[in-house]
Image 1: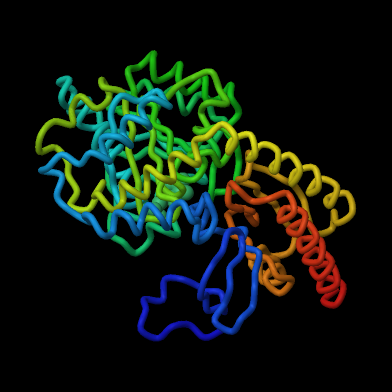
Image 2: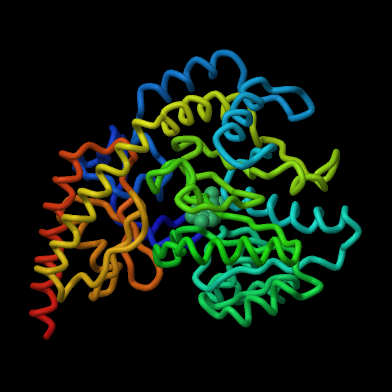
Length: 399
Ligand SMILES: *Cc1c(COP(=O)(O)O)cnc(C)c1O
């Protein structure tokens, strides 16, 4: 398949040229319509071209786009206050992307211990299958070899553990160099696995026992995606630090690192910064998106649609067990482990008229907008059934 000549070849791009979107629909230059269950990888939480976001963006565009964080930005303070009111956090740092929010958290963790007189505490403990973004530190945190090879020596201070090895975890957490545990409560790219509540509790206990910060990467699973505003709210525990991005700006690039006052105590004047992070244009859109996404009705709706989708997918498994193996994830972060190569299933879904995302462990992901209607969910199930039939036919042909 031909790829763009003047762009770095780092993406394997699907052969569709996009032109415009509306809600859950994406239209191509050649006039085709797709049901978009990718939404910029769980980013357009309110779908494409949401009128409330368009209004917020156009109003702000005529007023003020950008100043620097050396001035007070009222909407930034307002959004930070909302985020803190609705979570464990006391303070926020705004970024332009998820991986920058991760960078901020990694720096915060080390600075926290350094400020308390323990600069040797630098180790960030992460788990297999993790994805934390693409900056140099974030790929080292993720530990995925495919993203690390060829980029020189690995950075020190990252410890990668398999899930479920309690002895190794205890050894790493009790080490005198341990700083923090970083985990996605529900994995996104890494196979859409939800960490059981009792494991989250176990991580909290270890952090409390050894003085580590517990840091949740909710860049994909936060902002209502799982049916609670934050995924950790399904459990009885709270983290010390949380990273959000993706749906936070409803499609506008915004990330944030949330922390308790104590966890952020090392982040004093000069410790960190960003030119664009939290600028007036981003914050106007962010506030509008947040108002919508954080509404109890929105979250209730996520649970309703997700229950419907999951029930339907379970019944498809009983009919198409040769194609579909398992349904995973939480809320509208739906992972489907498939038997044919996942990229082929994605292409067949596209041919059927629905766009779906990929994921590790041979998963595909359904990431509809959070305001997707039940009718659209029903349409999606029909198109996925078509996809599974096509996959079955193809397997027969090649057998
Ligand atoms: C997408 C993602 C990131 C990286 O966010 P970018 O905005 O691409 O930098 C980090 N962590 C998780 C869990 C993600 O899903």
